[in-house]
Image (cartoon, rainbow, N blue to C red; front, side):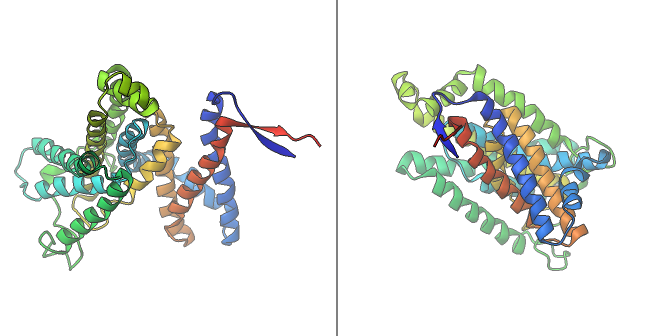
Length: 352
């Protein structure tokens, strides 16, 4: 018999191994699930873990899917390390897409490509404004940011629905809930010709060292970390919890809004009611699988992007529902939470 025994201190090695154990358990359960559905486990798993890595086109799509996950995940990781529980990256993503899309609709084909700068900036400001509502409600009325940020996601979705079903609806769009296509001048430059991978991926990668430097080499970043890990010490040092709250939420909202702007301009080129594929919610898993570390967020985002692509391939090739993406994401989070117990506890054999 085995029993759990508390460790004297958290295991650093298990902090790194727990996500790997969770991934292995996810793969095993995924194989079992494919078998129960009457599909070949090997063929099903290949769609999730091999097909996305095949060829330049596959890698480009992987980077495309990972871009919003990296940006949203970085912001959420900073929030959680500061002990601010922002669950509303999805709403901030949508507001960024709305703000950027609204400006892009007014750009003409003859407009200079520099119009992308104010459009992307509008996306950042849109996400920051939505996150500022969460900060205001927490700061002014002590409202729980978990609830307010989550509820604002649905407000953002209803606002987007109103716009694409109403005033921004494309009159030549065959009654689909979508805007007209944006002007060619708003198209994002491609990193790899012939693919959909755009400069947003490069920006997301540049944001990784920038976030690491901010958290570890700047005073505001240091205040965030101290406030999250040792609130009493932060109060003793005179660090303002209010300033940290606003800083981290505006930072997270801005990154999520930028992700929304990139997604509206990049692969879509218009606003639709489904502009987001749940990237803001998936980024929560990305942040925790990545251990709230910038580099870890990138690796976790790439893994989550493989789940997105695998779900689409399973739908088209095996006739399975696209919900397989969510199943793999949920399994990964479930097993990660289970494996995390080994960070603070170890398995011991129980003697009779």
